[in-house]
Each structure stands twice: as C-alpha cells, then as structure tokens.
Image 1 (tube, helix red, strand yellow):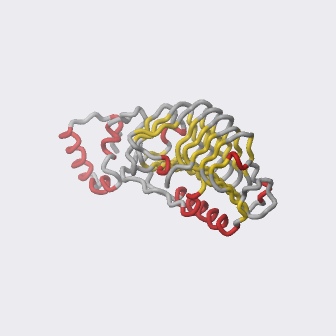
Image 2 (cartoon, rainbow, N blue to C red):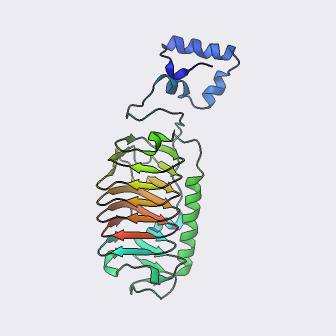
Image 3 (tube, rainbow, N blue to C red):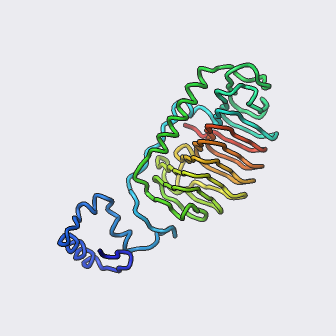
Length: 277
C-alpha cells in the first residue's frame, strides 16, 4: 500500500496515483465515496486553522431537536444548587426529584421555575409535573440523538485538546475527554451547526472563552458529554450542554446557552442566558 501522508504530488501525479490504485484493485470511486477530501487529507498534514488533519465528512450537521426541553435555560433530573447570587434568563426546572432540591431564589430567575411538588423553598415555583416529565423525556431524546450521530467531520481532533483552535461547523467526536485550555472560536453562519460528541468528561479552563463569529448562533451549538462537565472560574461557554451526569459551573462563569443535565447542576454566582430558539 502507498503511504499517502509522505507524498507530495502535482494534480497530474495525483490523477496517475488514482489510476494506479485502480489497477491494483483499489476502486477510486469507492475511495471517493468515503469522502472526496480523502486524497487531499493524505497530501497535507494540517488544516488552515492549524488543527491536525484526519478523515472527515464535509456534510453539514443537522441541529439537535430539543423539543420542550428547549423551553428551559436549566433543566435537571436531580437538583440545582446555587451560591447566591446567580442571574438566569429563561426557565428553570427539576424532575423527577422533589422541588426541595431546587435551591434558587425567585430574584435570580428571569423566567418560570418548575417543580414536581410543593416541597421546595422557592415561593415563585410552579408545580407542574406534566410539563417537566415531557421536558425531561425530550432532553433524554436529544442526548441520544446527539450521541448517535455518525460520520464526524473530525475524529479525535487534537487528542481531546481544542484550546486555541478556530472550528468550522460540523460533527466532532472524541472517544475520551475534551479539554478547552485556551480560547476557542466557532466560525460559521447563522444556520450552521456544531455537534461535539464527548465520551468522557469536558473541562473548560478558568478565564477561557468559547466565542462565536460570522453570525454563528448559540442555539446551534451542542455539547453532548457522557461524563461530568466543568466550566471553570470566570470562563464563558456558548451552546447547549447535553450532559449525562453533572454540570458544574464555577464562580463567575457565564453561559449563553442551555444546561440540560441528567443529574445535577451546580451554580456559583453565574450568568446563564437562554438563547432564542
């Protein structure tokens, strides 16, 4: 077999190589079906953003349907704790755990607060188990949708470290954890979608920012994380977090997006803003 990453070919040479592969029993059409950029990936070690090359799929990612879970800025199955004072723009809810596990005050929430019973300490809460049951179900469905996406644009980009990169729209997949150790930019248009599949934990370092440019919108950015999510002190994150376990937002961190957790959400003097749907 040829070692494609060691070749530097002219267009004519590349064409000759494809013909030769066909003569050796390798179907160029089949190679193209795996992704038209396969040959070009082999001929260049890095992308224009400085990130490593790898087999990728150029098809645009489709948005994850959130259903009624999209009506919430924060939604949790096992409670929300808070170090006063946080500022949450959007609805908040917990289910199936009792309302006693939702530890926010009314003045911290610019939206509605939903609980499954009247046991909680927050007087402005709405007792609506039906709405919450539907939203939790939609959250779980959205998580499975994001987790089940295939044909990633990038697979194991940066070995799980994306600090300093500018990322194009598409599906990204890591079989381990994800670390954002320095600022990251998501560059794309208003209808472009990013889906990040993370099999391990996700850690956003303190004072680090995820920034959107080119008209990109937080509602179209999805972080699907199987492990715990930690957003560091004074860090800023854009997008919808679909977490299988804990979402911990450290002191002074801000989020333009949604925190949808299948266990708990912990807040410490944070600003959480629900984007338009």
